[in-house]
Image (tube, rainbow over all chains, first blue to last red; front, top):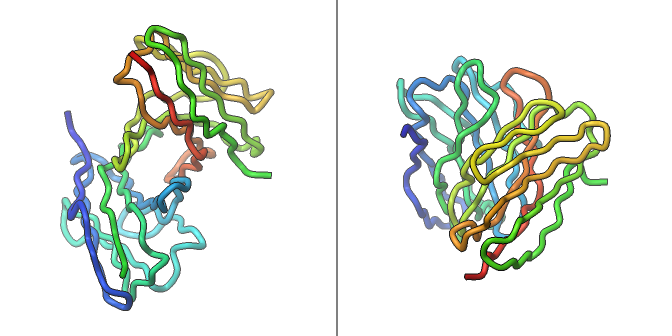
Length: 113
Length: 112
């Protein structure tokens, strides 16, 4: 069964460093998303991406964040200068054309020290 | 008022019980409703999805949507210890590349 994959599973970084989280969406999906979940809190939407551009973004997705589809399979989330409060699980999701359900990856746990 | 409210539990039931999980929402623009299961420190796994009001059944799982009451439910029949997880409701507006809005999740434990 096709699935969304994410790497790395766990990333530890120091405050102020840049991190790139990687996702491989399901192969025939065209809509991509990033969500985050701070420990013990709700899953929160960050950004949606379609046709090589951002479709929607939340208030959380400020200038420190960027997304990119560098090739035909990968979808990345970059945080330019990490803060302690960026520590969370980051989930990538994808959706197929004509569908409304989103499929999530296993997540990357980001720890900022 | 929160957009999506979900009783966090924890909910503990004996094996074989019928489980009822619920969410209420305030935004009448929500049209698509999903239930996800999440094991500890893992990604949300899609269980059920429905559009508008009505029931949908898939094996031991039944999803119900009542848009007039802004209330959705997930029923699990013949619950198993492997059903122990956090259950998240999620919903979205309209068509297109819209974001999901999640409830806070209900933690379920099914005791053998």
